[in-house]
Image (cartoon, rainbow over all chains, first blue to last red):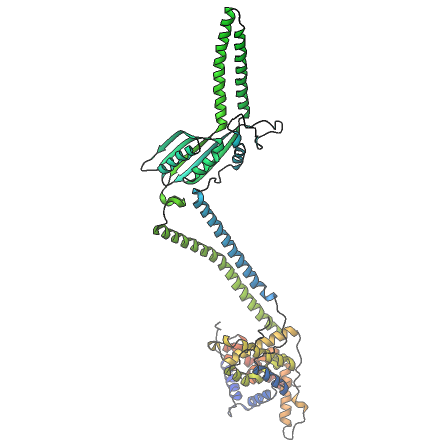
Length: 381
Length: 171
């Protein structure tokens, strides 16, 4: 630190010059001052020879035998430890935040192979999975869904209608659309309806698929590999009541038909025969209608409805890793991205460390100043 | 914090500094502390610290002697703080010995100076020690005290004035 100099008073400067002359042993020095210098120097405390000899030996040995030391004091290190702790905490926070960002990045990139996104409804999926084996409507199946079964009817077979909505993004809509058809056929299902729109702008395609409920999961796994899964929504509706109602009406109509046929066998008059044939005709129409209703309900349980929307995106937005080989352009893009992330992390670290550094510097300056003042206070005591 | 227990290398320059300054450092410490044993300890501490820190000496910031006396001053003040008491000067009074014939006047004068020094404030006594015993110039004293050379000169002048007044004061 540069200290401010000032011009000494001429009288003071003259006396100081006289003192310097006396200290230097100048014969022309002021006699009184020279005598004072001589007397003060004669009063200078001198080290005893034994003490001087001990000190000489210690110096020769490089102070290998230290003086009695104060114990290791932790207290002066507390501010430094505090600052170090803050720095470590900041580094950990930055590392964790950077790791979280990487996780998002990986999740996004891996979306092409993922089958469920955050918009999926797992509870519906679980319910549907638990009943997927029993939704075919086959009379031979006796397993019940634990998720949907009620305690009042534990043995009652549940009928579940499953529906799924899948949104995919890809750079090649046509290829993905072909894949949708192939995946549906492979799962034993069929395309109920489809719509493909291609052009210079944004290409899209949408499908309504019917897939056997027992193979829905397999179909979804195949479909999810066709692009980046933007969203996946699944739902499961219990249609056991509608199924049982349709089945009961059909059974009753069949029983009625059997009764009418028996009555026709026993008819003796032409009027009876005519009346019974009219009722049998009515019963046949009812039976056909009830059979259609029952088939419809059974199909709802045995065939899941899968809606698939495929949206085309530009290549740089596509995140599926299997879109193409890793090119030098991709490498340059990744390198720039790495530099951006590194710069961001460095900026955040600077934002954290700079205030800490300033606080630490201020604390250090205050500690030095305080120690100096305490020393001076000891001299004043 | 305890210093490193390993011995430090005693260089030729440090050896020369020790030989030329040990007595002055002791005299300065004893004048400040007014305790012989404490002065010995402070002197040893000052040279040990100087030896450990000899690489930190920067000639652009002052002479080696000023740097050494700055270390000695800090050690002495730390000792003062630790002891929390002002010790009495335990150096043997020169006046106790019978003065040879013809030196009675000188002995009386020295006794007067000794008594005058004892009446000075510690700050003034420190300045007298730095000036008379250590032989530092005003710039070096300024480095030791952390003030400018002109400020150090002013302080030395005041201390000298007080010493003169104390010498001429009626006993």
